[in-house]
Length: 222
Image (cartoon, rainbow, N blue to C red; front, side, top):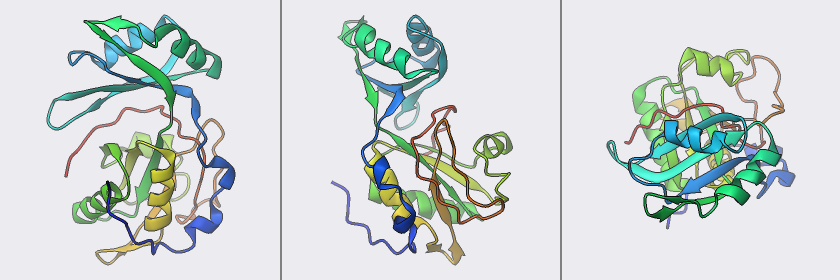
């Protein structure tokens, strides 16, 4: 059980869309009980049998260990539903894999001026909810992909994948506009197919939407 985390990140909750509470990422499926030797290449090959795969990745554990869990994003919700019907219970190396609708949410944190600030933000994020993976620092390409560069965000950023939407929303509420080691950081969930942006250049913009898993995570543990 995670410790209760005091929220003092401004009025971020006031701008949350209540309709997103508990919504699922219907074009993305979560796969668990995978064999330890399974990697993202095998995962893509297996699920391409169902339909076009937009992206996929495996969740790493400590060191180089695999957790037996991965995610696949299809181009359509129909293919995601087909994947659940066709692949749930599919036997692999003596195991029956579990395929279900993904209920995960990624949050991007910005204003991380140095690794010390980033380390503390990641630590606090882990206290708030279950973290599957962390990508820090975001590359220039990913900053552009997520629309951060266009929004005027220039300092280092990190993306954190939470195991559930509730934890991600709590992280935004708690950490958005919070001062960490003398630096005011901002937080916002990564958007889905239709990203709703704030004003250009406004770093404090807050976006609540379903996560789009069109990226690969480089996992760091602190």
